[in-house]
Image (cartoon, rainbow, N blue to C red; front, side):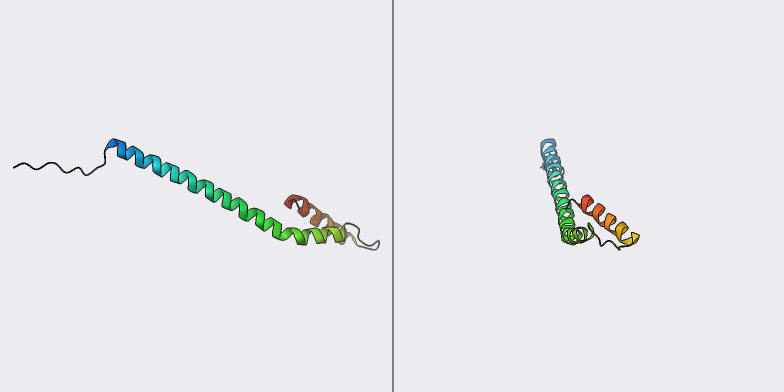
Length: 86
């Protein structure tokens, strides 16, 4: 009596479905990780904004007897505020 051969590998159609499903899952995971990275970046920037805004507002009009260092510091804080979009 002859036995039927055992099929070890999937059919070509099943194989292509597996590749398509894997590719779709990869795209979804990639998109989700990009969105999460952008969210964390925005949240980090917002955490600094309150400090940067208060420092920038304070040093926009320094006292008349301020030194050059205070003016340079104020310019640096203002540049950081603009870069963060605060």
